[in-house]
Image 1 (cartoon, rainbow, N blue to C red):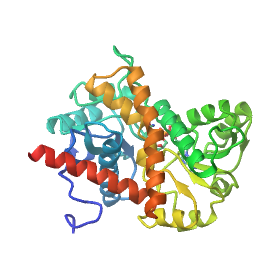
Image 2 (cartoon, rainbow, N blue to C red):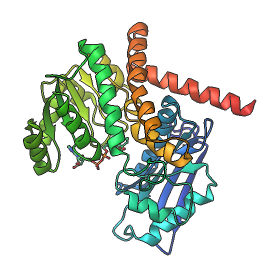
Image 3 (tube, rainbow, N blue to C red):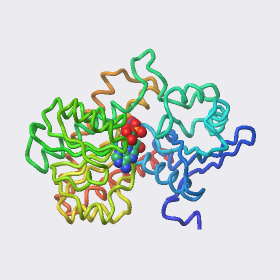
Length: 353
Ligand code: NAI
């Protein structure tokens, strides 16, 4: 049943939105507001069925609670999904209707970009609610596409993993296999190339992968091969659930560190990685750079230098998780979940006091 489903996990609110005029069908899930308003982007995606959309919203929303808590942000977790459909194109009217729905939650949910949404969409949503972020850069120099900020967090987080697992303090000659060269993966490839890493790249847009490889001096491989490349690091920067029993068995790397949300297909996959001696940088810890930027923009309380310092702290946070995993013998994802739940629990206690 719904309330007992594993993915529901005590969500505070799940709102199902339907707007007849525009065909909007959306789900807004708010997992927790214990630490502050539930912040998390909105995804525009075609799902196999409504149940898949609900599962995605719930998993992503809880992930945002954990991500925001671990990033030290005064925010809870939430997520929006708009069900993409041929009969409901992404018109301005549809986005405005979504903005109305966000507004009706009175600030318990703050939206921003996710897969399928861009900053121009956020500007349309902003006509109907102020609880929106990821708008173009304004006064304090913070805002716009969060992808490059996320890439910076992945870069410093990967550095922590390389130091911990390989005992190396730079990327010179470190071989990184990158899956997905979009907003995050592309910016990450650039940074790693500058730092002297050796790159193997794959994207479903094969021309894109080849162009990056030619420009940055790496190799491009077919998408089916990227999880099997013999490398130091595998960096998933496409879609989620890429780490399952089959891919983990085929991995030939020491480290997994990338931006994709919900990389582990099941809760067992963190233990599978650990059992193979592969160091996993928990996705919601390493990919927090974008939300750090988005929240600074929403709260208007930080400039670009402050955001850069907050992103830099991802490196030390991961180093702590890796050390605790070694000490306790637990997988890194389990260590991070425990830390995140403790932070959210303390927030709930403080709110009740
Ligand atoms: P994007 O849409 O800009 O790029 C995704 C790239 O992956 C595209 O180039 C696409 O062609 C490629 N791709 C899709 N399926 C693939 C496959 N099976 N194999 C290889 N390549 C494939 O998305 P973006 O913004 O770069 O995000 C990447 C991932 O990181 C997503 O999972 C997103 O949820 C996550 N993320 C993004 C953040 C951001 O600030 N943009 C923040 C936190 C997480």
